Amino acid sequence: KEYGEISLKDIDHVAKNSFPLCMRHLFEKLREDHHLKHGGRMQLGLFLKGVGLKLDDALAFWKAEFSRKVGAERFDKEYAYGIRHNYGKEGKRTDYTPYSCQRIISSTPGVGDHHGCPYRHFSEENLRAALSKMGVGNRLVEDVMDKVRNRHYQLACTLTFEAVHGASCDAGINHPNQYYNDSKKILE
Ligand code: SF4
Image (cartoon, rainbow, N blue to C red; front, side, top):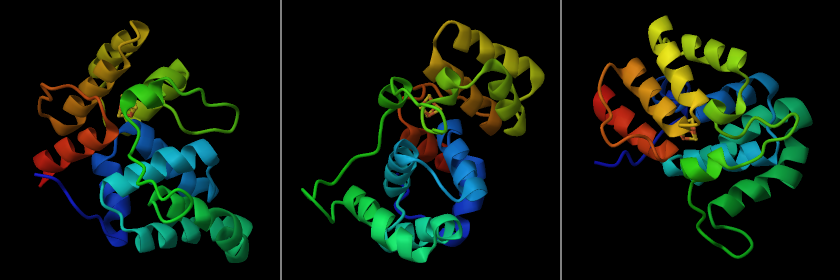
């Protein structure tokens, strides 16, 4: 079963319970800073499209945050295009697909960027803090850190999934939207 739609009123709840750490981090930063740089807008924007956020809702969602930082007018001028573009409504009208783990893991976030894979790109200290905030217990955090040290980032994410859902994920995590779909299957 695919989970075809997500509405704006549920989005914070769903982000907390069913987004993988990479997307949860972007989502929280957007809510906090009312802004994300290009790499973050792409990674989170396409993921949200993949979980079924409709274009109109996506525009409303991003506008509500960015308006608080740059104003509604600048949002309409500079940022709305990129969102419509992700949905295939501008430019070459390509219907862009959400990024896979592999693509995210191999990205190279710079200073001030919040995209990327936290298992790969966070400092050990920040990763530990993020995991405990997600409710991963101390012993399991050590298991996750062990995978990270061996550069098995997707296995680290799989262990996190299993810890927060109290259920196994035999297939492993290879796509943020798969993490989301598997989570919804368990939680609904
Ligand atoms: Fe996101 Fe994939 Fe990294 Fe998990 S392993 S945090 S889903 S990029």
